Length: 473
Image (cartoon, rainbow, N blue to C red):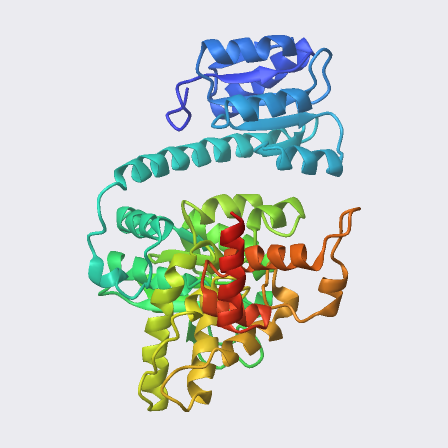
């Protein structure tokens, strides 16, 4: 077997014995793969997997006893690390999408796509190799962060964030592409910069935002052009790849690329070469690539909006930045940092941060993440005039984004109140008051000042109600 393939055999599952023989010959003649196991009874698959190591499964969909769909679910549950490629005699888009969503690596039509199948097998093994390498890296990521000065710009005490720092340190010298995913506003470019500072800080850093670029603009920006490439091309223009040299090229909003642009980017990553527009001579790319997107690329693949082969090339290394609502313990640190930054920029003294403000903001989902929090702080600093910061600017900002909130405690929409469902026995006003107090204390994390504000009563009135509840036990 060729060295590019694992030593463990490929398992081929199909109830048609002639097809199994034909496929085995194709794998041997076209790719040098001769370590295969042919199985024509779907009931034997799971016992076989329990007995020996398998590198890849080629699985027919329509079989007696256990269907390919049934087996796919069982394999994905018990052996999630084994890639499964579905082979079907029918070209059904709905079936293909369903299999991919259930965990299949790819889906091919068995009678007409043998050449593409060989490519898919190579990609499956490459992805498995990368996953194994990443697992080794993650197992090494157990020591404290070494480059504290690079990560000092991140205001966090979150364990997931620290694990990402350690992972970036481990992969910085690999030269493989890095894909950074996360919602808008979580700071993906900040992580890209940290990766660059750890890998090639003395070489160029070039950033390109792919959002809104059609195929021509993308090609011209990335590859450049020679004189005469198009009507207005009078002079040579070096592209971003040339400018990056041996440094780092950061492509943001990669999920917005058109299909033609995706094909060109895939060719660049596979071959390491590109052609400036209008040129017949290729150039070599020596840059390290970092990509970022706020899209779910796997969903876009299922919808036919993003190439699967490009996705696997992009994410040799992959980090996902958690949203702010999943790291609420960082809000107080971020507030202090942004308060000082904003006060310095507007020429004011940094005001005292109300102690109830972190509790208030921790009840908000922050659809705009850290960027939204920073905007809130800068707006509040611009408006405040007294020594102590008022909560009102933050409350107004949250109310303004009411439609984006999932669990807001500040809803002013009467429809939310009117949609409350009461039990068959109507509770008394006293019981409703107790329920409201218990709920608001949970949401405010037992901050009585914030809870009283949310209930629209004084803190003294809330204290009396809490004391009464305590007396009742």
